[in-house]
Length: 421
Image 1: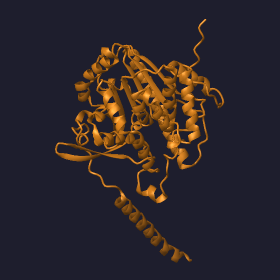
Image 2: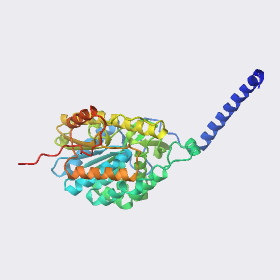
Image 3: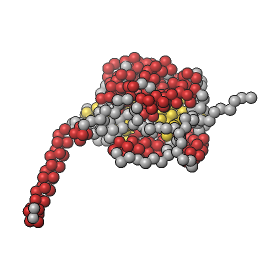
Image 4: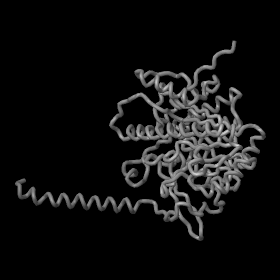
């Protein structure tokens, strides 16, 4: 081809590429699932159809907290029946949820599992939260959910064309199926019964339209009863575990002021790695004497630091490392804030996590053998009373490991308790 012919062909190729891009954009728009507009106000008086407005609240809604917090704390104190209030916060972490599940299972076997008046969950922690809330009698279901082959096929990829037309690399079906299997009518009734005793089960999602955390009162949802309660309960759990870009977001329909809207919810860990009472202090510096002496426990379903590792130039490797890095740094910040808050109000703060030396393969590694090993590790550490540690101890462990070459160790987060003489 001579220079003149090449010059005439170039504009044609550019027009063809532009036309193809416009056609693809049109197809993407045409195939997108239609949704109603989101509520126009940041804090609005809306709720899922048939549910009270206090079934959930924005985490920075000061007015809501002013109206409801003191009464809720009094109910928790009554539920504790003269003992200190116990709060359990379960973090996100994807496949790392097997560690938290094993820890709870091991605490039961050791006879050291407290009754928690408050259980909060985010992402993988949200899936774990109902079992933690309902206690040891639900341990068989807990083990089945996190230590079985059920999770091995959670990451079912779409075709390349499906990835273009859907906001998630993986299909939603396996996650929905897992949640639907365990969120039974019996579970809803059991959660409702505990909620009526004053206990709280709270799960966080992220409202992408508002770009804020939403805290759902799962006990209040369960108390509504019937198929609608089961549907919304499961929907919130799926939304909280829907990692952006990995799973599609969940559309939750709400109503208020005679209008109907659609909200787009994703992984609660997008905005909160976990949440305890310290999040209240961000918007409402109240003095709550009932919380003095409370026991706060946090299970971080992941690591707080890692050895350097050459990241493969592959989409999943980059996505997994990026997600883990964001969660790791957010968890460290949240732990520091929670520890300071607990110290200020005379609360006892303990947490557990995966040490740097544990051979953790990342939050998206749902391989059964690795999750089984992680579950059993949590069981062993809980049975050996080497689960709960402090912030200072964790910092010391991280500093020691950071100065060493990478090494594999299955040592528990906490040091062995010296034998009494």
